[in-house]
Length: 503
Image (tube, rainbow, N blue to C red; front, side):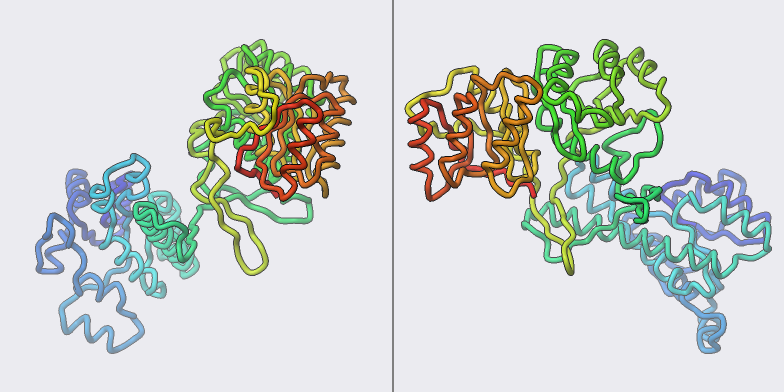
Protein backbone atom coordinates (compact mmCIF):
# COMPACT_ATOMS: atom_id res chain seq x y z
CA UNK A 1 0.00 0.00 0.00
CA UNK A 2 1.71 3.16 -1.23
CA UNK A 3 -0.59 6.02 -2.13
CA UNK A 4 -0.47 9.77 -2.57
CA UNK A 5 -4.25 10.15 -2.38
CA UNK A 6 -5.07 8.63 0.99
CA UNK A 7 -8.87 8.77 0.72
CA UNK A 8 -10.32 5.47 1.90
CA UNK A 9 -6.89 4.07 2.81
CA UNK A 10 -7.65 3.25 6.46
CA UNK A 11 -11.04 1.74 5.57
CA UNK A 12 -9.43 -0.52 2.98
CA UNK A 13 -6.52 -1.32 5.30
CA UNK A 14 -8.89 -2.27 8.15
CA UNK A 15 -10.92 -4.48 5.80
CA UNK A 16 -7.81 -6.28 4.55
CA UNK A 17 -6.48 -6.76 8.07
CA UNK A 18 -9.81 -8.24 9.19
CA UNK A 19 -9.56 -10.67 6.29
CA UNK A 20 -6.11 -11.88 7.32
CA UNK A 21 -4.07 -9.88 4.85
CA UNK A 22 -0.62 -8.68 5.90
CA UNK A 23 -0.10 -5.01 5.08
CA UNK A 24 3.18 -3.71 3.69
CA UNK A 25 3.49 0.02 3.23
CA UNK A 26 5.78 2.98 2.62
CA UNK A 27 6.34 6.40 4.19
CA UNK A 28 3.21 8.48 4.65
CA UNK A 29 0.86 5.62 3.83
CA UNK A 30 2.42 3.46 6.58
CA UNK A 31 2.08 6.35 9.04
CA UNK A 32 -1.65 6.75 8.31
CA UNK A 33 -2.26 3.01 8.68
CA UNK A 34 -0.31 2.85 11.96
CA UNK A 35 -2.19 5.83 13.36
CA UNK A 36 -5.38 3.90 12.64
CA UNK A 37 -4.07 1.09 14.85
CA UNK A 38 -3.28 -1.33 12.04
CA UNK A 39 -0.20 -3.57 12.02
CA UNK A 40 2.02 -2.57 9.12
CA UNK A 41 5.26 -4.01 7.81
CA UNK A 42 7.53 -1.22 6.56
CA UNK A 43 8.72 -1.88 3.03
CA UNK A 44 12.37 -1.68 4.07
CA UNK A 45 11.88 -4.82 6.21
CA UNK A 46 11.13 -6.69 2.98
CA UNK A 47 13.90 -5.11 0.96
CA UNK A 48 16.53 -4.85 3.67
CA UNK A 49 17.27 -1.45 2.17
CA UNK A 50 16.18 1.87 3.71
CA UNK A 51 14.23 4.52 1.84
CA UNK A 52 16.88 6.74 0.24
CA UNK A 53 17.60 9.68 -2.06
CA UNK A 54 14.97 11.83 -0.31
CA UNK A 55 12.37 9.11 -0.78
CA UNK A 56 13.00 8.68 -4.51
CA UNK A 57 13.96 5.04 -3.96
CA UNK A 58 11.65 2.94 -1.79
CA UNK A 59 10.17 0.07 -3.73
CA UNK A 60 12.60 -0.32 -6.67
CA UNK A 61 13.99 -3.60 -5.36
CA UNK A 62 13.83 -7.32 -6.31
CA UNK A 63 12.10 -8.09 -3.00
CA UNK A 64 9.13 -6.10 -4.33
CA UNK A 65 9.26 -6.63 -8.07
CA UNK A 66 10.19 -10.30 -7.83
CA UNK A 67 6.96 -11.27 -6.00
CA UNK A 68 4.92 -8.91 -8.20
CA UNK A 69 6.10 -10.65 -11.36
CA UNK A 70 6.46 -14.21 -10.01
CA UNK A 71 3.93 -16.62 -11.54
CA UNK A 72 2.35 -19.04 -9.11
CA UNK A 73 2.05 -21.79 -11.71
CA UNK A 74 5.68 -21.56 -12.87
CA UNK A 75 7.93 -23.76 -10.76
CA UNK A 76 11.13 -21.82 -11.42
CA UNK A 77 9.49 -18.54 -10.34
CA UNK A 78 8.38 -20.07 -7.05
CA UNK A 79 11.81 -21.62 -6.47
CA UNK A 80 13.42 -18.21 -7.01
CA UNK A 81 11.11 -16.66 -4.40
CA UNK A 82 12.08 -19.35 -1.87
CA UNK A 83 15.77 -19.05 -2.72
CA UNK A 84 15.76 -15.31 -1.96
CA UNK A 85 13.33 -15.53 0.94
CA UNK A 86 10.73 -13.31 -0.70
CA UNK A 87 7.05 -13.38 0.25
CA UNK A 88 4.16 -13.46 -2.24
CA UNK A 89 2.41 -10.18 -2.97
CA UNK A 90 -1.22 -10.63 -4.06
CA UNK A 91 -2.48 -7.05 -4.08
CA UNK A 92 -0.94 -3.69 -5.01
CA UNK A 93 -2.69 -0.52 -3.81
CA UNK A 94 -0.90 2.40 -5.43
CA UNK A 95 -1.89 5.80 -6.76
CA UNK A 96 0.56 8.27 -8.18
CA UNK A 97 2.11 11.62 -7.39
CA UNK A 98 -0.22 14.39 -8.62
CA UNK A 99 1.78 15.35 -11.69
CA UNK A 100 -1.17 16.63 -13.73
CA UNK A 101 -2.51 18.71 -10.83
CA UNK A 102 0.95 20.17 -10.21
CA UNK A 103 1.20 21.28 -13.84
CA UNK A 104 -2.25 22.91 -13.64
CA UNK A 105 -0.98 25.03 -10.74
CA UNK A 106 1.67 26.50 -13.07
CA UNK A 107 4.39 25.12 -10.82
CA UNK A 108 8.06 25.49 -11.72
CA UNK A 109 9.76 22.95 -13.97
CA UNK A 110 11.73 21.66 -10.96
CA UNK A 111 8.55 21.11 -8.92
CA UNK A 112 6.80 19.37 -11.80
CA UNK A 113 9.73 17.03 -12.35
CA UNK A 114 9.80 16.17 -8.64
CA UNK A 115 6.16 15.12 -9.02
CA UNK A 116 6.96 12.53 -11.68
CA UNK A 117 6.29 9.21 -9.99
CA UNK A 118 8.73 6.39 -10.80
CA UNK A 119 8.24 3.61 -8.26
CA UNK A 120 4.44 3.79 -8.37
CA UNK A 121 4.02 3.22 -12.13
CA UNK A 122 6.72 0.52 -12.02
CA UNK A 123 4.84 -1.44 -9.34
CA UNK A 124 1.48 -0.97 -11.01
CA UNK A 125 2.74 -2.12 -14.39
CA UNK A 126 4.52 -5.14 -12.95
CA UNK A 127 1.48 -6.21 -10.95
CA UNK A 128 -0.93 -5.57 -13.84
CA UNK A 129 1.27 -7.67 -16.15
CA UNK A 130 0.98 -10.55 -13.69
CA UNK A 131 -2.83 -10.33 -13.79
CA UNK A 132 -3.19 -14.10 -13.31
CA UNK A 133 -1.87 -13.81 -9.76
CA UNK A 134 -1.91 -10.16 -8.64
CA UNK A 135 -4.67 -7.56 -8.34
CA UNK A 136 -4.04 -3.83 -8.73
CA UNK A 137 -6.01 -0.92 -7.29
CA UNK A 138 -4.79 2.29 -8.89
CA UNK A 139 -7.54 4.62 -7.62
CA UNK A 140 -9.58 5.02 -4.41
CA UNK A 141 -12.65 4.74 -6.64
CA UNK A 142 -11.97 0.99 -6.87
CA UNK A 143 -11.80 0.24 -3.14
CA UNK A 144 -15.51 -0.24 -2.48
CA UNK A 145 -16.04 -2.58 -5.43
CA UNK A 146 -12.95 -4.56 -4.40
CA UNK A 147 -14.23 -5.00 -0.84
CA UNK A 148 -17.65 -6.08 -2.08
CA UNK A 149 -16.01 -8.58 -4.43
CA UNK A 150 -13.96 -10.12 -1.64
CA UNK A 151 -16.93 -10.21 0.76
CA UNK A 152 -19.15 -11.96 -1.76
CA UNK A 153 -16.72 -14.45 -3.30
CA UNK A 154 -14.01 -14.79 -0.63
CA UNK A 155 -11.61 -14.24 -3.51
CA UNK A 156 -10.91 -11.79 -6.32
CA UNK A 157 -12.12 -13.12 -9.67
CA UNK A 158 -10.00 -13.12 -12.79
CA UNK A 159 -12.44 -10.77 -14.54
CA UNK A 160 -12.11 -8.24 -11.72
CA UNK A 161 -8.31 -8.49 -11.84
CA UNK A 162 -8.31 -8.14 -15.62
CA UNK A 163 -10.56 -5.07 -15.47
CA UNK A 164 -8.33 -3.59 -12.76
CA UNK A 165 -5.24 -4.30 -14.87
CA UNK A 166 -6.84 -2.48 -17.80
CA UNK A 167 -7.57 0.54 -15.58
CA UNK A 168 -3.98 0.41 -14.37
CA UNK A 169 -2.52 0.54 -17.87
CA UNK A 170 -4.93 3.32 -18.80
CA UNK A 171 -3.68 5.25 -15.78
CA UNK A 172 0.04 4.70 -16.31
CA UNK A 173 -0.33 5.42 -20.02
CA UNK A 174 -2.19 8.68 -19.40
CA UNK A 175 0.41 9.59 -16.77
CA UNK A 176 3.28 9.08 -19.21
CA UNK A 177 1.38 11.07 -21.83
CA UNK A 178 0.89 13.95 -19.39
CA UNK A 179 4.62 14.01 -18.65
CA UNK A 180 5.70 13.84 -22.29
CA UNK A 181 3.19 16.51 -23.33
CA UNK A 182 4.33 18.79 -20.52
CA UNK A 183 8.00 18.42 -21.41
CA UNK A 184 7.16 18.96 -25.07
CA UNK A 185 5.41 22.20 -24.16
CA UNK A 186 8.36 23.28 -22.03
CA UNK A 187 10.74 22.68 -24.89
CA UNK A 188 8.43 24.63 -27.22
CA UNK A 189 9.53 22.29 -29.96
CA UNK A 190 6.54 22.85 -32.24
CA UNK A 191 4.45 19.92 -33.32
CA UNK A 192 5.23 16.65 -31.54
CA UNK A 193 6.74 13.74 -33.45
CA UNK A 194 4.05 11.51 -31.97
CA UNK A 195 0.59 12.66 -30.93
CA UNK A 196 -0.40 11.09 -27.62
CA UNK A 197 -3.91 11.60 -26.33
CA UNK A 198 -5.03 9.85 -23.18
CA UNK A 199 -8.45 11.31 -22.48
CA UNK A 200 -10.68 9.84 -19.79
CA UNK A 201 -14.19 8.85 -20.80
CA UNK A 202 -16.52 11.53 -19.48
CA UNK A 203 -19.70 9.63 -20.27
CA UNK A 204 -21.54 7.52 -22.78
CA UNK A 205 -24.05 9.39 -24.91
CA UNK A 206 -27.48 8.24 -26.03
CA UNK A 207 -26.30 8.40 -29.64
CA UNK A 208 -24.14 10.45 -31.99
CA UNK A 209 -25.17 12.91 -34.66
CA UNK A 210 -27.96 10.50 -35.59
CA UNK A 211 -29.79 7.85 -33.54
CA UNK A 212 -28.15 4.95 -35.41
CA UNK A 213 -24.64 6.13 -34.38
CA UNK A 214 -23.24 5.12 -30.99
CA UNK A 215 -21.21 7.83 -29.22
CA UNK A 216 -19.32 8.87 -26.10
CA UNK A 217 -17.52 12.00 -24.93
CA UNK A 218 -13.92 12.04 -23.67
CA UNK A 219 -11.77 14.62 -21.94
CA UNK A 220 -11.95 17.09 -19.07
CA UNK A 221 -14.94 19.20 -19.98
CA UNK A 222 -15.73 19.52 -16.26
CA UNK A 223 -12.68 21.80 -15.92
CA UNK A 224 -14.14 24.23 -18.47
CA UNK A 225 -17.92 24.16 -17.97
CA UNK A 226 -20.47 22.98 -15.44
CA UNK A 227 -24.00 21.94 -16.40
CA UNK A 228 -26.12 23.56 -13.70
CA UNK A 229 -29.48 22.30 -14.93
CA UNK A 230 -31.14 20.16 -17.55
CA UNK A 231 -30.65 16.87 -19.33
CA UNK A 232 -27.27 15.42 -20.20
CA UNK A 233 -25.67 17.16 -23.15
CA UNK A 234 -26.01 15.18 -26.37
CA UNK A 235 -23.38 14.71 -29.07
CA UNK A 236 -24.79 17.60 -31.11
CA UNK A 237 -25.14 19.70 -27.95
CA UNK A 238 -21.42 19.32 -27.27
CA UNK A 239 -20.62 20.50 -30.80
CA UNK A 240 -22.90 23.51 -30.42
CA UNK A 241 -21.59 24.43 -26.97
CA UNK A 242 -18.03 24.17 -28.30
CA UNK A 243 -18.91 26.55 -31.15
CA UNK A 244 -20.62 28.97 -28.75
CA UNK A 245 -17.65 28.95 -26.37
CA UNK A 246 -15.23 29.65 -29.21
CA UNK A 247 -17.29 32.60 -30.40
CA UNK A 248 -17.86 34.19 -27.01
CA UNK A 249 -14.23 33.63 -25.91
CA UNK A 250 -13.21 36.18 -28.56
CA UNK A 251 -15.31 38.81 -26.74
CA UNK A 252 -14.14 38.15 -23.17
CA UNK A 253 -12.81 41.66 -22.70
CA UNK A 254 -15.47 43.48 -24.73
CA UNK A 255 -18.65 45.21 -23.64
CA UNK A 256 -21.65 42.91 -22.95
CA UNK A 257 -21.88 40.59 -25.93
CA UNK A 258 -24.36 37.89 -26.87
CA UNK A 259 -23.98 35.18 -29.53
CA UNK A 260 -26.77 32.91 -30.73
CA UNK A 261 -25.64 29.64 -32.32
CA UNK A 262 -27.54 27.07 -34.36
CA UNK A 263 -25.91 23.92 -35.73
CA UNK A 264 -22.47 25.29 -34.74
CA UNK A 265 -22.96 28.50 -36.77
CA UNK A 266 -23.58 31.99 -35.41
CA UNK A 267 -27.00 33.23 -36.49
CA UNK A 268 -26.70 36.48 -34.53
CA UNK A 269 -24.02 38.32 -32.55
CA UNK A 270 -24.19 41.76 -30.96
CA UNK A 271 -22.37 44.00 -28.48
CA UNK A 272 -24.26 46.61 -26.46
CA UNK A 273 -24.12 48.58 -23.22
CA UNK A 274 -26.18 45.93 -21.42
CA UNK A 275 -26.58 42.19 -21.82
CA UNK A 276 -30.32 42.58 -22.32
CA UNK A 277 -29.80 44.94 -25.26
CA UNK A 278 -27.08 42.68 -26.67
CA UNK A 279 -29.49 39.73 -26.69
CA UNK A 280 -32.20 41.76 -28.40
CA UNK A 281 -29.80 42.91 -31.12
CA UNK A 282 -28.36 39.42 -31.65
CA UNK A 283 -31.85 37.93 -31.86
CA UNK A 284 -32.95 40.62 -34.31
CA UNK A 285 -30.33 39.45 -36.81
CA UNK A 286 -32.44 36.38 -37.56
CA UNK A 287 -35.63 35.91 -35.54
CA UNK A 288 -36.33 32.40 -36.85
CA UNK A 289 -33.09 30.41 -36.53
CA UNK A 290 -32.59 30.98 -32.74
CA UNK A 291 -35.54 28.70 -31.89
CA UNK A 292 -34.01 25.58 -30.39
CA UNK A 293 -30.59 27.19 -30.49
CA UNK A 294 -27.80 28.05 -28.06
CA UNK A 295 -27.30 31.45 -26.46
CA UNK A 296 -23.88 32.41 -25.12
CA UNK A 297 -22.79 35.59 -23.40
CA UNK A 298 -19.65 37.11 -21.94
CA UNK A 299 -21.27 38.45 -18.74
CA UNK A 300 -23.22 36.83 -15.87
CA UNK A 301 -26.84 36.36 -16.94
CA UNK A 302 -29.22 38.77 -15.21
CA UNK A 303 -32.98 38.41 -14.68
CA UNK A 304 -33.99 40.97 -17.32
CA UNK A 305 -32.02 39.15 -20.03
CA UNK A 306 -33.21 35.77 -18.76
CA UNK A 307 -36.86 36.85 -19.13
CA UNK A 308 -36.24 37.79 -22.76
CA UNK A 309 -34.39 34.57 -23.56
CA UNK A 310 -37.15 32.59 -21.84
CA UNK A 311 -39.69 34.03 -24.27
CA UNK A 312 -38.47 31.69 -27.04
CA UNK A 313 -37.50 28.02 -27.04
CA UNK A 314 -33.79 28.02 -26.22
CA UNK A 315 -32.15 24.64 -25.74
CA UNK A 316 -28.89 25.72 -24.07
CA UNK A 317 -27.75 28.91 -22.34
CA UNK A 318 -24.03 29.44 -21.74
CA UNK A 319 -22.70 32.16 -19.43
CA UNK A 320 -19.83 32.81 -17.00
CA UNK A 321 -22.43 32.87 -14.22
CA UNK A 322 -26.15 33.15 -13.53
CA UNK A 323 -27.73 35.56 -11.07
CA UNK A 324 -29.91 33.62 -8.62
CA UNK A 325 -33.24 35.05 -9.80
CA UNK A 326 -32.33 34.33 -13.43
CA UNK A 327 -31.28 30.81 -12.52
CA UNK A 328 -34.55 30.05 -10.76
CA UNK A 329 -36.59 31.37 -13.68
CA UNK A 330 -34.68 29.38 -16.28
CA UNK A 331 -34.82 26.19 -14.22
CA UNK A 332 -38.60 26.15 -14.58
CA UNK A 333 -38.13 24.40 -17.93
CA UNK A 334 -36.74 20.98 -16.89
CA UNK A 335 -35.05 20.08 -20.17
CA UNK A 336 -33.28 23.37 -20.81
CA UNK A 337 -29.52 23.08 -20.26
CA UNK A 338 -27.83 25.84 -18.27
CA UNK A 339 -24.07 25.79 -18.73
CA UNK A 340 -21.71 27.83 -16.58
CA UNK A 341 -18.28 28.74 -17.99
CA UNK A 342 -15.71 27.85 -15.32
CA UNK A 343 -12.52 28.71 -17.19
CA UNK A 344 -12.71 30.54 -20.51
CA UNK A 345 -8.91 30.40 -20.81
CA UNK A 346 -9.17 26.63 -21.37
CA UNK A 347 -11.66 26.92 -24.24
CA UNK A 348 -8.94 27.15 -26.89
CA UNK A 349 -6.59 24.13 -26.80
CA UNK A 350 -2.92 24.21 -27.77
CA UNK A 351 -3.75 22.24 -30.91
CA UNK A 352 -6.93 21.37 -32.78
CA UNK A 353 -7.44 18.01 -34.46
CA UNK A 354 -9.57 16.68 -37.31
CA UNK A 355 -9.90 12.99 -38.08
CA UNK A 356 -9.13 12.05 -41.68
CA UNK A 357 -8.41 8.84 -43.55
CA UNK A 358 -5.61 7.04 -41.77
CA UNK A 359 -5.11 9.53 -38.96
CA UNK A 360 -5.42 13.14 -37.88
CA UNK A 361 -4.77 16.65 -39.07
CA UNK A 362 -3.26 18.86 -36.37
CA UNK A 363 -2.97 22.65 -36.28
CA UNK A 364 -2.81 25.59 -33.94
CA UNK A 365 -6.26 27.04 -33.20
CA UNK A 366 -7.22 30.29 -34.89
CA UNK A 367 -7.01 32.42 -31.77
CA UNK A 368 -4.75 35.32 -32.77
CA UNK A 369 -6.66 38.53 -31.91
CA UNK A 370 -7.09 41.29 -34.48
CA UNK A 371 -4.04 43.55 -34.80
CA UNK A 372 -5.26 46.90 -36.18
CA UNK A 373 -1.70 48.24 -36.26
CA UNK A 374 -0.91 45.77 -39.02
CA UNK A 375 -4.04 46.58 -41.07
CA UNK A 376 -3.64 48.47 -44.35
CA UNK A 377 -6.20 50.92 -45.64
CA UNK A 378 -5.82 50.50 -49.41
CA UNK A 379 -8.59 52.83 -50.65
CA UNK A 380 -8.91 56.57 -50.97
CA UNK A 381 -11.69 56.56 -48.41
CA UNK A 382 -10.45 56.19 -44.83
CA UNK A 383 -12.62 54.39 -42.24
CA UNK A 384 -14.59 56.42 -39.74
CA UNK A 385 -14.28 55.54 -36.06
CA UNK A 386 -17.67 53.82 -36.21
CA UNK A 387 -16.77 51.84 -39.31
CA UNK A 388 -13.50 50.70 -37.73
CA UNK A 389 -15.31 49.48 -34.60
CA UNK A 390 -17.84 47.62 -36.73
CA UNK A 391 -15.11 46.06 -38.88
CA UNK A 392 -13.23 44.80 -35.82
CA UNK A 393 -16.48 43.38 -34.47
CA UNK A 394 -17.34 41.67 -37.77
CA UNK A 395 -13.77 40.40 -38.17
CA UNK A 396 -14.17 38.41 -34.93
CA UNK A 397 -17.50 36.98 -36.07
CA UNK A 398 -16.36 35.93 -39.54
CA UNK A 399 -13.56 33.87 -37.98
CA UNK A 400 -16.21 31.51 -36.54
CA UNK A 401 -18.29 31.20 -39.71
CA UNK A 402 -17.73 28.36 -42.18
CA UNK A 403 -16.02 29.33 -45.44
CA UNK A 404 -16.76 30.98 -47.75
CA UNK A 405 -17.77 33.40 -45.00
CA UNK A 406 -19.29 36.87 -45.37
CA UNK A 407 -20.65 38.97 -42.49
CA UNK A 408 -22.56 42.24 -42.81
CA UNK A 409 -22.59 44.26 -39.58
CA UNK A 410 -23.54 47.70 -38.31
CA UNK A 411 -23.52 49.28 -34.87
CA UNK A 412 -21.79 46.20 -33.41
CA UNK A 413 -24.58 43.92 -34.61
CA UNK A 414 -24.63 41.25 -37.30
CA UNK A 415 -27.17 41.97 -40.04
CA UNK A 416 -26.57 39.14 -42.46
CA UNK A 417 -24.31 36.06 -42.38
CA UNK A 418 -23.46 34.00 -45.45
CA UNK A 419 -21.40 30.82 -45.25
CA UNK A 420 -20.54 27.43 -46.67
CA UNK A 421 -21.17 28.39 -50.28
CA UNK A 422 -18.97 27.30 -53.21
CA UNK A 423 -18.36 30.93 -54.19
CA UNK A 424 -17.81 34.07 -52.17
CA UNK A 425 -20.38 35.89 -54.30
CA UNK A 426 -22.98 33.25 -53.36
CA UNK A 427 -22.22 33.86 -49.67
CA UNK A 428 -22.48 37.63 -50.16
CA UNK A 429 -25.83 37.31 -51.90
CA UNK A 430 -27.12 34.96 -49.23
CA UNK A 431 -26.01 37.35 -46.44
CA UNK A 432 -27.83 40.23 -48.16
CA UNK A 433 -30.91 38.05 -48.66
CA UNK A 434 -30.96 37.17 -44.95
CA UNK A 435 -30.53 40.80 -43.91
CA UNK A 436 -33.37 42.00 -46.13
CA UNK A 437 -35.58 39.08 -45.06
CA UNK A 438 -35.47 40.41 -41.50
CA UNK A 439 -35.92 44.05 -42.57
CA UNK A 440 -32.41 45.24 -41.78
CA UNK A 441 -31.16 48.47 -43.33
CA UNK A 442 -27.77 47.54 -44.79
CA UNK A 443 -26.97 51.11 -45.70
CA UNK A 444 -23.84 52.18 -43.85
CA UNK A 445 -22.91 48.59 -42.92
CA UNK A 446 -19.49 46.98 -43.09
CA UNK A 447 -18.56 43.65 -44.66
CA UNK A 448 -16.06 41.12 -43.32
CA UNK A 449 -14.75 38.35 -45.57
CA UNK A 450 -12.74 35.43 -44.16
CA UNK A 451 -10.57 35.25 -47.31
CA UNK A 452 -9.70 37.46 -50.26
CA UNK A 453 -12.15 38.46 -52.96
CA UNK A 454 -11.00 36.67 -56.14
CA UNK A 455 -13.02 39.02 -58.37
CA UNK A 456 -14.53 42.48 -58.11
CA UNK A 457 -18.08 41.07 -58.23
CA UNK A 458 -18.12 40.63 -54.44
CA UNK A 459 -17.21 44.30 -54.00
CA UNK A 460 -19.87 45.37 -56.48
CA UNK A 461 -22.48 43.30 -54.62
CA UNK A 462 -21.49 44.75 -51.22
CA UNK A 463 -21.58 48.33 -52.51
CA UNK A 464 -24.90 47.79 -54.25
CA UNK A 465 -26.32 46.49 -50.95
CA UNK A 466 -25.23 49.70 -49.21
CA UNK A 467 -22.01 48.72 -47.43
CA UNK A 468 -19.51 51.52 -46.89
CA UNK A 469 -16.47 49.57 -45.68
CA UNK A 470 -14.93 46.14 -46.24
CA UNK A 471 -12.38 44.22 -44.20
CA UNK A 472 -10.67 41.25 -45.84
CA UNK A 473 -7.24 39.54 -45.85
CA UNK A 474 -6.17 40.48 -49.37
CA UNK A 475 -3.64 38.40 -51.27
CA UNK A 476 -5.50 37.80 -54.53
CA UNK A 477 -3.74 38.23 -57.85
CA UNK A 478 -6.64 40.59 -58.62
CA UNK A 479 -6.24 42.74 -55.47
CA UNK A 480 -5.64 45.83 -57.61
CA UNK A 481 -8.85 45.18 -59.53
CA UNK A 482 -10.74 44.69 -56.26
CA UNK A 483 -9.28 47.88 -54.74
CA UNK A 484 -10.15 49.78 -57.92
CA UNK A 485 -13.76 48.60 -57.59
CA UNK A 486 -13.88 49.80 -53.97
CA UNK A 487 -12.59 53.22 -55.03
CA UNK A 488 -15.12 53.41 -57.85
CA UNK A 489 -17.90 52.82 -55.32
CA UNK A 490 -16.37 55.26 -52.82
CA UNK A 491 -16.11 52.69 -50.06
CA UNK A 492 -13.29 51.97 -47.62
CA UNK A 493 -11.31 48.74 -47.75
CA UNK A 494 -8.90 47.33 -45.19
CA UNK A 495 -6.52 44.43 -45.87
CA UNK A 496 -5.57 42.51 -42.73
CA UNK A 497 -2.97 40.19 -44.19
CA UNK A 498 -4.46 37.28 -42.22
CA UNK A 499 -7.01 34.74 -43.48
CA UNK A 500 -9.70 33.04 -41.37
CA UNK A 501 -10.72 29.96 -43.33
CA UNK A 502 -12.91 27.57 -41.34
CA UNK A 503 -13.80 24.39 -43.20
